[in-house]
Image (cartoon, rainbow, N blue to C red; front, side):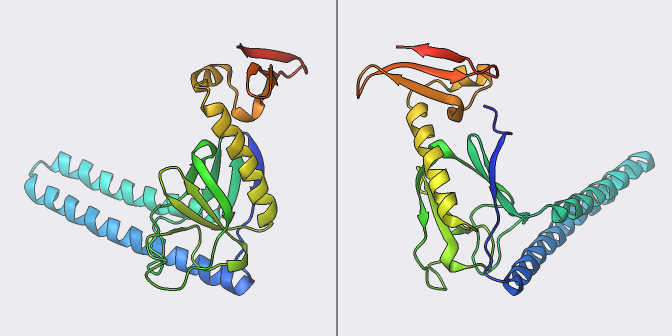
Length: 234
């Protein structure tokens, strides 16, 4: 499906500029720590390879690969840090751009880096209850480390995974996500994903004609010319 079409964007709600600063600082610390440990492991592996190999040409290639990987990691992280953190609503999913490799040591995120949440998998989206600091927060997936609790949204998917996202204009976000999720759950039950993929359509492009309150007559979409095109006739 055409998940690259942006429907809306929302910002994280940190509560204040000071909280945002410390949240970003913690995220940067986590990234730097992850890079450090990865480079340490990478250095150990390549050091062992250098000790085992006697061919000078092959050694040169291995050294080049080592420095290339390190340069790529550093450059990738620099580019990533320039991208703003936000929540993007695509046609078939929520994209949470966190720009962190690992979660903070205080919250222990389940997910790493940026995340995708498919609408059709969402079973709950509403304001989160307050979670006391400590073990109850461990294992939960927070989009950022420090935030405004009053705007914290909890999303639960059908596998039981819980996402906690502080969102500016949380009321609008919740209403919009629930609308897309309800549509996605409805159309996903019709087993038409392959047909939509071939047509380049998403659930949000579809409309329903009803024979009766409980019986579908047809599924259709509106093309670029404004014509209503029948996709499926029941």
